[in-house]
Amino acid sequence: MSLESKSASVKKKGGFCVYLGPTIIGVITYGKVFRGNKDDAYKSAAFAIDKNPLIKKMIVTSDTLVEDRIKAKTPGNLLYEIYQQILTNK
Image 1 (cartoon, rainbow, N blue to C red):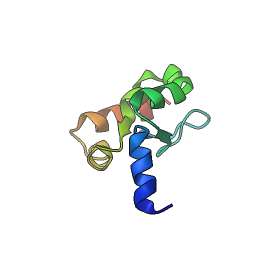
Image 2 (cartoon, one colour):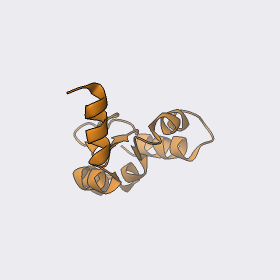
Image 3 (cartoon, rainbow, N blue to C red):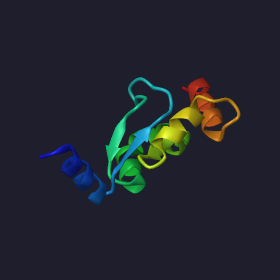
Image 4 (cartoon, rainbow, N blue to C red):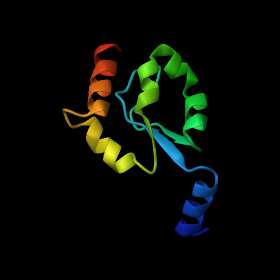
């Protein structure tokens, strides 16, 4: 299967989402990939979201991944503020 075919099949199934918040040992790790759309990701990350509801806000879609990754590391952005809140409340 070619790379283009794999990419197309992932998009048909809803793409993927990524957690961009800090690693919380035993709960969730930075860069965790979830197959499917945001609803699928939230279901897969339910344990982590129960531990810290802000984790939900740091799960982003593949469509916005590049921009959101930068925002999470740039002061003055909402994603950066949420990242910092998660970091201090581990």
